[in-house]
Structure formats: structure tokens, C-alpha cells
Length: 191
Ligand code: B4P
Image (cartoon, rainbow, N blue to C red; front, side, top):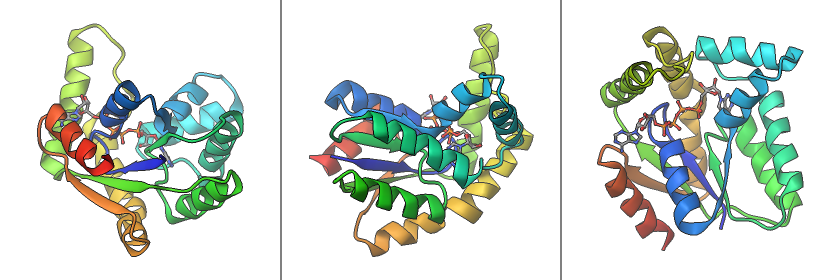
């Protein structure tokens, strides 16, 4: 089974992907995590990625599609959770072509619906909790970057909702509940 987790920043894509890995042994492909790893590499690409992410903007399609392509090359079989990818129509088209090339298909696109006020609270909380625990705070978890992240989501990513609806793949989940309740709703969809 291959699925996409779609939703705005802080919707819980990473959180729910973690649950699916634990419960079903699926393989989480998080472009956010891949890019955070790339930015620590000290390469020219890493530095470019860091500046874009800190501003809250989307990294170029070329870089992100390249990262996913590389990961898929190294994996046998399926069972992928695409966490935070695709985020643009170009990325969605590229994913369709890549899966086809690997003899795979998409089983469901799960959209986590959460309103902006709650998203902002979650991200601010994450930053505060990390600070209180003496852990590093994500450079994009601040009010200014978050404003850009939300604008990027509505402009570039939200058109994917119609794209996957038209293909009959879209499933919508209320992402406002407790983490366990959201996980249960996803479980119900995936069977
Ligand atoms: P991501 O790493 O994908 O981060 P995100 O969208 O902010 O977070 P997510 O939805 O996974 O939220 P989480 O579960 O952590 O992207 C970061 C950046 O990378 C982007 O801005 C962009 O620059 C770049 N990028 C990534 N993919 C890209 C792509 N494909 N193309 C271009 N650029 C790309 O949850 C957030 C918080 O909420 C956590 O603290 C969590 O504990 C809490 N939470 C989750 N569910 C909850 C619930 N049900 N109730 C209460 N709290 C909850």
C-alpha cells in the first residue's frame, strides 16, 4: 500500500506517519526530514535549502523530486508513506510517473484538515516545548516563517486536493482531534 499524507504545516503529517510506521511497518518518506538532513551537509545545495526553509518557502521541485527519486531507487517493493510530498502539481505529476516506473500505484491520499488558528498554536507550542527542554528549535517554527509556510500551502499545495479528488484518490480526515483519534480515523480508511 502506498499513501500520501497531505495537509498544511503542523497538520500532523509527520506525527501520523510515525504511527503508521509503528503500526504497519510502512516506510516513511518525509521530504521535510530529507531536506533537514541535506541542510546539515555543508554542501552548496544544503546551504541553499537551509535559506529557503528558514524563510518558510518551498524548496525547488527539482531538488525535492531528485531526493524522492533517489530514495525510491534504493527501496524494493512498496508500503510508502509520502509525508509532505508532493507539495506542488509538478511534484504530483513526477510522483505518478516515478511510481509507474517502479510498477507501483497510489492507494490513497489522506488530507488532514486543520484550521489556521490550531496550526499556529501547535507550531508555537512545539517551539516552546523544545526551548523549555533545552532542545534545538526548528528555524522555521516562528511566526514570520509560519505566515509564509501557510501562504505557500494555500497557493501551491492546496490545488492538489482537487487534483487527487478528480482521480478518486482523496480521503479527508478531521485533523483537529487528539493524535489517537486522528490515527483511528486513518486506520478506518486504510482498513
Ligand atoms: P515538513 O517537515 O513537512 O513540516 P510541516 O509541514 O511543518 O509539519 P507536519 O504536518 O509534519 O507537522 P507535525 O506532525 O510535525 O516541512 C518543513 C519545510 O520543508 C517546508 O516548509 C518546506 O520549506 C520544506 N519542504 C518539505 N517538503 C517539501 C516539498 N515536497 N517541496 C518543497 N519544499 C518542501 O506536527 C506539528 C506539531 O503539532 C507537533 O508538535 C505535533 O506534536 C503536534 N501535533 C500533531 N498532531 C496533533 C494533534 N492531533 N493534536 C495536537 N497536536 C498535534
